[in-house]
Length: 609
Ligand code: F6R
Image (cartoon, rainbow, N blue to C red; front, side):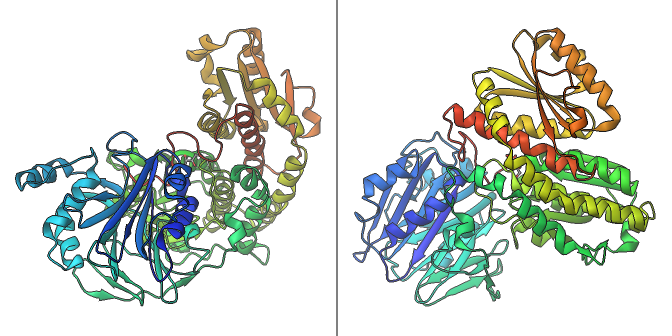
């Protein structure tokens, strides 16, 4: 949801910033821009609507702009249409200050009226231009002072970087609710919304804390809290290899990330199995807390919410605790019934999704225990939760999640069994069997990935469809939701997911001869019922692809095509079943010529409400 970068050092800033923006383009791609401070006390701005390639062109790869301090932005539009004028950076009327912003200044209309009263005029429709003008209004030679005075009037969320025409020796970065990272170099320093933009230059990073402000200079970075006091943070050393944030020969990050799932799941599961038992290493949510739980809420957005939908069944089954699964954007406004005997489990790949972060804060205010399942180490959600368990999926770049979804799912299954054991519902023998099922999972997924040609062919049959329906019951319904989301978000084919038994209550009227239906039938207790649902839609002329588990099911689904998964344990099955649906979405979008890693209107990390 918008990516920002900043640089100060002895190199030319523009090419370096463009390179950083390339790594952040997954966060938004409506427009891109740069603001560079020259040694003649001027700010040069270049910005263009559309993809970063347009900015590359107008700046000749950055070479057209000289200067050793600058900021850059790739935009996911919120206020104002995605055109050149609304693109960042925004410059104050005087030309003294330029700013890039990720987030929303909610009270921008009120601030704008105030500034108009002071004689300021505006060119864009954005909230961010209001922010830069307000900083300009307060600027009297002290950048930090001006930013702090303006910030005191902002209502909303922001990660910002600000340059000043007469300050070639520093720039300012600050954040509230949106992520911002400082990259520490030798005689040069960087800021970025996410780590991949920094990896080429440094592995020493600091995640700026909530409401902190950094004065970034060549020789170092000074960080201040919201009271203006100096604070010190120990830098974190990033250990990923650069390749993990590159495509490595794959055409798309999405396919690479699908293929990485066996390893990602192994990395997530293996360290949590010790001497044949699940050990999660929780600090605050100890056995007494787990035994005291009367209710669990799982709260998340999008695919992470779909993980919660599957995990609900596992927690109720193994740990015998009632579970509600809520969309984060609804949870905080629902007056949730949360108390000290409630655990709120927050699931988020980025750890920065604003709706999810706000839901976490609401849960804490209401006195619940909080546990987050997060991929990005040190992210806001990870830091603010009582306990955190990381999914070790590695950097996920494609906008549509695959490996993060699957590692979240694997980890949630472990949590369900662990809670079950602590609460006395899972015996040591049962635990050992369940662990064996999870340990075998990477090989099961490897087999599915090795045999993907059939899925590729099925996509070729379906890519011209207008609508595709996904059906499933129980856990398979939760998986259908994810299969449907994956398909629609990257291929733009209209798709809906239905519980098999629910179809006849209205939606079956949409099934006409030729409609494509994908029926997930891996949940054995409801096998016959799903087969009946396949018959129902086939009777109305649908063309059905069934996803079933085990060779013994081949030829028994009644569907037109079957994808037969290798046999695997029930506990591992959801993580395996989702893989053919990810591949189906990928190949369908590929056939349609869609921009798979950057689907329209979407962004990877949604840091606005
Ligand atoms: C869909 C997708 C999104 C995210 C959602 C939550 O493929 O990736 O639906 O799952 O935006 O993001 P995180 O997990 O970062 O909180």
